[in-house]
Length: 623
Image (tube, rainbow, N blue to C red; front, side, top):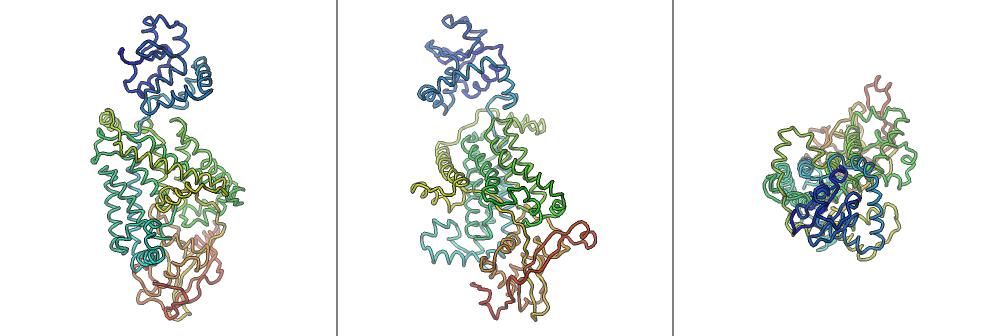
């Protein structure tokens, strides 16, 4: 014992007490001495012996002592950042009485609460560490960024390049003409420097390089800020082709991770800064919003298929890009679809609340959400969404939960390199993280409230904060498939040289040929195929890019044709182009056995009447 330090005395024969004292000892990091009453009680004759059996005793250096809940709160006040707990005990009316009553309840029923502690926290009560969790999370985030940048880079020229469907240069030129200097605030993108294919390609190249550095653990903090800025620039300039929820999810995750990553420049575990608890909880809050909102919007939309648990009767067939396994899932009995929908709602609406629970209960969020992501991955093409969500789920596990899965040699090496006291991030970084947290909680709090109160009016100041944050697409609202699509409409583009004989343009991933087996593209995202699904939900005039797409096909643009499965007019582009509208359905077991077809379809009529370059005004193209 040190005469200059406080002393916490506890019952050394009580396993429950020893476990919690072990946790507090780790938290206070040598600022307090700890000793069992069986060793030191005789040194404090002023304290009745029965008090040692009834509660812990906190003894100050001057000899003043406290017991019960107050002793606990005085102990925790020596944990950095926890002094407010003692202030609440002393200043908030009624709090002391309630906490002392609860302490006496626990003290009388230690065996029960010991079991409860084991159920909630397991056998490890020491404060959780997240070095291994962070290591795995950042590598998976780097892999996600790599997928996203490469996926876009391979399609960039055909989508938004100078000769693409929706050229970023023309798009940004129109914005500049309409908004002037205000464009920098509303559309934040580095492409204002040079809005052409060359710079887009450079951003993608920088993104690929940065992703590899992130996976290698090199310069992680600056690299994460660079990746966020590069991907934001592409998302802003990409218009409709970069407007998916996983794009903004990647931006939000990436920006938060820049405050979560270790600060050293090279990958040395022994020098890693401590993972920020604040940013850890913000990343968990992001996972909560993503999963819970996806369930809440389904009910809030009033869609009958979700309310009656019949949505999966249509989902596998009508989702944007089905895979082959979706055909088999579609054939399952409707009763099983209904049960599966109920399980999905249980996962999306109940499991997220365990995200904020003690370490063992967090597994009730981790396993169901990961299970749901795997099912979605197996039955549909949802790009890198599932990979990124699983990466966020890893932050529900602490190092104690993950290390048993490491080979023994690796685990021993990990313990040896992370055994020292980790450094705190720099004060400026902590202040920036605090500001980021405050902004995120204000904006996301408003968004979550909007799920339940659509008529809510924001105060002027809060509205300004919300409006200022929105253009950066890094503090977002989420919610997938609020309304189930119950019919699959497909647009089939056809070209002709004489307006009599028509040949279809086939896409690589979206349904077209009836015998075409639904393929697996994920984690790659064929963005044109996805946009064709959305275009089929409306009219050509609702999708301005579609007219440019038709023009590029008539023009024979090699960049755009490269996005398709093959070019039915290899010698010269067709003279005429039309788009037919079909109603598609999966075949059944018998029809597939007889014909080999995965699909059947019925013609609904023209989506776009025949057009040609001689009547360019028919397609409303502006290039």
